[in-house]
Amino acid sequence: MKSERFIELVKSNQEPLRRFLITLCCGNREEAEDIAQDTLIKAYLSSPTYEERYKFSTWLFKIAYNTYLDRGKRAGSRLHFDVIGENGWIPEASVEEEIFKYQSLYHALEQISERERTAILLHYIGGYSVKESAEIMNCSSGALKLLLMRGRNKLKELLDLE
Amino acid sequence: MNMTPEELFDSFNPDLGDKDRYVEELSKKLESVEMLHRICEENARNTKVAVLVAAVVGLLLGGFIMAVVLLGPASGLDFNLKLGARVLNFSIRYSYLTMLLLTAVPVCLFISLSLRQQWGRSD
Image (tube, rainbow over all chains, first blue to last red; front, side):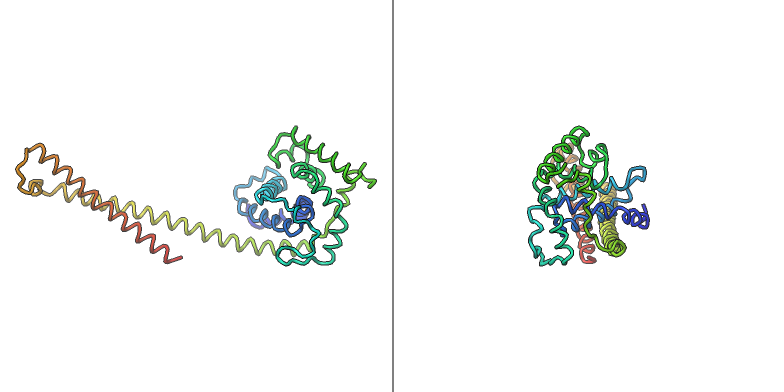
């Protein structure tokens, strides 16, 4: 795949990817953006082996999820309520407002297990089917359905959803 | 919260900044990554070439030395020792092989090390 084609595909996929990663990291933007950058670089280096008959977004999300796992830490434990980040990063006012606006969602997502959270986010934020989500998470469709059901039930309870 | 999970996530819309600027910055990073990737690949290729050259030169030199030794007169190597013919022949053959190994191995090592040193200096 040529670099121009890659950039073109990234343009349409970078927003859902970053949204997915922000929620996966339970609101930790710094971590989410780092993972997003790593993902896109890894995808670019692997692009010569990418076959266009597969969906680009599925492939990208799979790399993103694996990158997140490789990081080997729960980004949510360094929660977004710290005003100043580890590297002295001070969030802009709009980001702080956003953190406040979505804090109940981030907090609830942090309460459920990582795999349940991923299953929920791939379905609701990524818009993937059970089969596609199972492919990304490298599990069976049955296992994915179970994770989805459990995650949904827990979120409904935590956030008092219908 | 009187919302379904679908409604909750549909309303999730964090500010991701300027899309075009993000892609532009990403493109610059990818150019740097590609350049580094090319340098690493070139270094790996140079190492393979150095090892291949060392192996070929060592084989050629070893073969040349073997040819010279085998063409030379065998009787010149008996050192006037009073031994049986069979034992003497065995010793002479063994000494050819020993001489071959003793010469070829350090030559190969020397070439390999000097090429690696040269490659290390060019880094």
